[in-house]
Image (cartoon, rainbow, N blue to C red; front, side, top):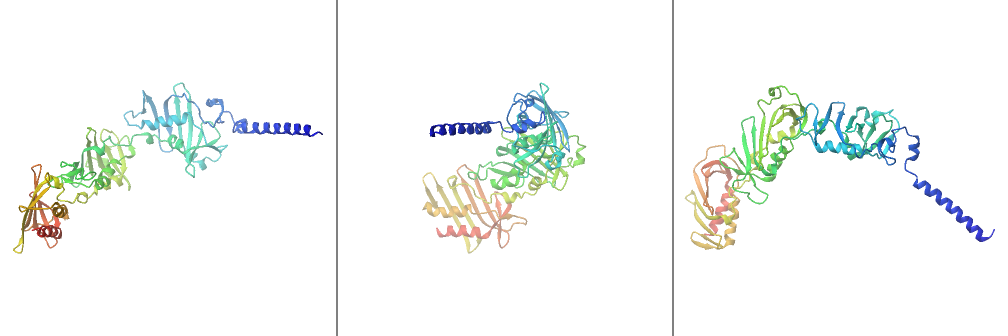
Length: 463
C-alpha cells in the first residue's frame, strides 16, 4: 500500500471518529431518561410547554387567579382581586403580596437540579409525607399542582413532586423557600407601619403604672448620633438618651414585634389578658403613621398574646422582645451629664462654694466666644486655661437617683446661655460619697463628691 493511500485511509477514520464524538456531545442532555419516562413526568415533555431543558413546569404566560394551600397543620385559599391577592373568607387580612407573586413566578417556570428518586416508595425520606401541597389555577383553566417536602441535608435545595408524577426532584434553595409557604406564611405579620427612625413619639405604659414617652430631644441632639431623643414622664424635665442604648432596649424590640400565630376568631379580650394589658405601646412617626400594640397574658413560655391596632384578630408575639421593653432601665439609658451645652453657647458661669469656713470659692467666668475672650473675676485668662475648666464642668455626671432627703446647700453653679436661658445646679449634702443635685429647682439625682472637688480645684489654680 502506498504511503499516500495509507494517509487517505487514516484521514477517513479520523473523520468518522470525530463525527461520533460530535454526535455524543451534541445529543440533548437526559435524552436517555426522556425515552423511558412516563408521559407527563419528563422535565422536557410537551405537556409543560417545552421540548427540552430541566423543567418541571414551563408556562411562561400563565396568569394565576387562585392558590390553594394545604399543610399538615392548616389550609387556605388565596384569590386574585384586581392586582392584589386576598385570603378567601378573611378578605380584610393583610397579605405579603410580593411573596405570593414570587411563589407563582417560580412555579410557572420551575426547573430542577437533579432527580432524587424515580418512584414515590419512600416519601418520608424526602419530607413529602408531611409536605405542603399547592394548587395554582390559571385564568385559562390550566393548573399547576405540586407537593414540596423537606430541605436537603446540605441546605442547598428542597424535594418536590408534581401532581400525578412519580419522580421526586431536587430544586434550588431559593425556589424551595418561595414555593414552600403555608397560608400563615403569606400573611402580613407586622403591626401598622411606623418609621421608628423618624419617630414623633413612642409612649410605653406598663401594668405597674409606669408610663413614659420617647420623643425628639427638645434641646436638639447633644452631638451627631448622640442624644437625638429624650424621655419624658419619668423625671421633671426631658432627659436626653444615649441613642445606641435606646435602640437596643426599646427601638429594636418594638420594631421586631411581629405575629407568631394568628387567632382569627378570638374570644373576648379578657380571655387573653388584653382587657388589662401588661404593656401598651403607642407610636407615631413624623409622616403621621400611627400604631398601637397591646400585650396580654403569656400564651406559652416563649410567646404572649397581643393585639395590633386596626386588626380584628389576636396574635401571639415573641416574649423576648416584650420582656426587653418591660425590663428596660430608663436611668441606664440617660446621657449622664448635667451640662451638654457647647462652650460656644455659654456666656457666663457663676460658681459659689460655701462648704465650710475653709472651703469657700466665688468665681465668675464671662465668655465672649465671638472675640475669643474669656475673663475670670474680671481678669482675662487664656482659652487654653479655660479649656480645662470646661472639660471638668461637662464631666459633672449623674451618678444615681436621690432616694433620701437632701441636706444643706454646699455649692451652686449657674450657667447662662446665649439663647437667654440659664441652668442652675445646687449641690446639697447627701452622704459621705454623694451630693444631692437640685437641678433647676428639682432634686432627683446624685453626683459624686470627688467630681466637684476636681472642678473647684482647677478653678482655684487660676485664681
